[in-house]
Amino acid sequence: MTARQQPKNLWIGRWGFVLAATGSAVGLGNIWKFPYMTGEYGGGAFVLVYLACILCIGIPAMMTEIAFGRRGRGSPIDAVKRVAQESGRGKIWSGFGWMSMLAGFMILSFYVVVAGWSLAYLWKALSGGLQGGSVDDMAAIFGANNANPLSLGAWSTLVTVVTMCIVGKGVQEGIERSMRWMMPGMVLLLLVMIVYAMFSGGFGEAVTFLFSFEVGKLSSAGLLAAMGHAFFTLSLSAGAIMAYGAYLPDSKSIARTTFTVAICDTLIALMAGLAIFPAIFANGMDPASGPGLIFMSLPLAFQQMPMGSVLQVIFFVMLSVAALTSAVSMIEATVAWLTERKGMSRKAAAWSSGIVLWLLSTLAMLSFNLGADWTLAGKNFFDWLDYLTSRWMMPLGGLGLCLMAGFLLRDEIFRDELRLSRWQHALWLLMVRYVSPLGIVLIFIDALGVMTI
Ligand code: PFF
Ligand code: NA
Image 1 (cartoon, helix red, strand yellow):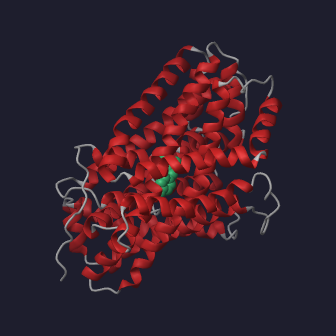
Image 2 (cartoon, rainbow, N blue to C red):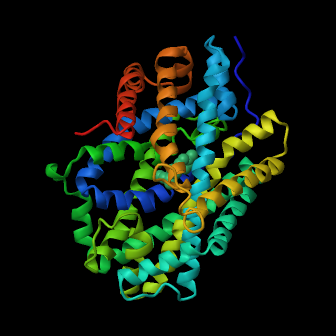
Image 3 (cartoon, helix red, strand yellow):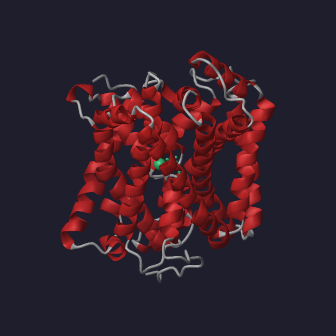
């Protein structure tokens, strides 16, 4: 049997892993996607289904990923390979590590474009360019922002450069250190916005919208969206959590850290809803306005309120920071792999993956202007990246890791790493063997378009 891998890098601070993993989890998924999905899928009914998915699928899968990372003490590719080998299995199983790493890379290449929107909007808010009288005016601003490949590309390039600077500095000096001020800063801004929302009208309506459960509004489309989003929002099967788990000290409890991260992620998603929807309701707008919710309706709603331009600035600073802390985590797997296996320095690894990333993200960015008609089966490049990762690669990676942990690999490894009580371990096994796989298979069936319920 191979001896347990010795760690090369570990989080230094007591909260190192929790901060970094929460930074990874909390991002555009919480502040951009969750509110508009909740708006589209009917409020409280969707929220409840989403919470169930986090609990039954997300949390067991996250525990599994961290266990793989810590046991294998390496990039997702090496970690999965080592854990498989420790169970007497071939290295072919590291394919799931490869897929995770690739998924993280692909997600990042469209994520930086959306993060770029956020920076562009911050700039507009600061320079007074985010004024308009109607949703149509705001749509025109959004359209103009996307139409210019040079400025749009400049903003996503800026996100890429900052991300690589942080990652290039190393796990402790770059990632852990920056998370120590970015995360509290982000939460503080969110709190300021919620306090404002409490006193500015529309808050009660927002609370009712988010938390009142109406059975009639439950839909199978909402259920599937909630399952898929549980993976995305917790950064699962994208290499990020596994790469960070490789730096988790042995003394830490995986279950406890997982619950902390999942609870923080969920609270922040709900808090984002409480910061955004009051303004929407106070101005009589439609909560179901889709992906444009925070780039069109919200800036317009803010602008009609006292201190509106300050609110716009606070919101887009918060959104940009949230996006950046997630972006950093998506590239860590690749950087860790390049340093371990190709002998590169952190800096060289960060910049070389940054260049490849930049090329891909430029293609994604062009989907909004020059390359709008480079489509395949009705989807442009940006849509393909999103579709392939969230509908196929993340669920497939999650399915693979759960089934490996549940059936294929030696159970002692997971007993050792998870250190749960007997019934807790049995519950975890039930989830990774049957509950998560079933949910994931439903996502596939839906992606194939054969589901008509
Ligand atoms: N969890 C992030 C969000 O909710 O915005 C997205 C994400 C981060 C996905 C890191 C995947 C990942 F590896
Ligand atoms: Na999230």
